[in-house]
Image: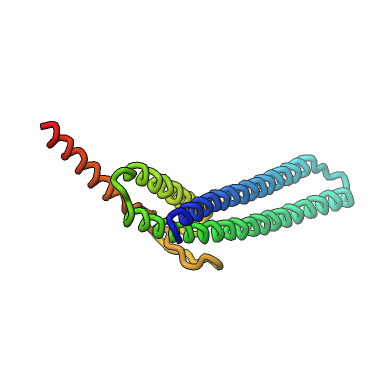
Length: 207
């Protein structure tokens, strides 16, 4: 691909990467809402059981049986709610994992495109545009690496891995090394060398 085509392609890919991160955030928000609703439901049911127990007044065997039967039913409902909560949270976990899989897959593609574009820039870099070129590549680098950091943090917080110094195999994107080094433009060394050369040249001319 030409440099112009590569630029257009990677800019679209980086935009897609941000969209995948937004989709992940949406799933995380939904998961948190479901979990909070479940916790609230459990608390309310526990409060109702405690209140019913406190109101227990035994006047005869039949009324006692009825009250105890009601408490037993409420306790069963509490257990069912707890099971339902667990199932819903696990279901949302699958959704989170799927969103992470999608995002890591796009990240892989963005990294490959960045390396190709970076190589194209470095091989054909001109002194007149070195600062501008470096700023452009550095901007892409920061965006790609920032999203990777967010994805890795999510993996740890959700309990899919214990730390970021490990690997994880996804259904679609395959093996992902969370401890991978982020992308880094090779033009950084070139830009520094040119800047140093220009500075030394100016010093020499002025003297």
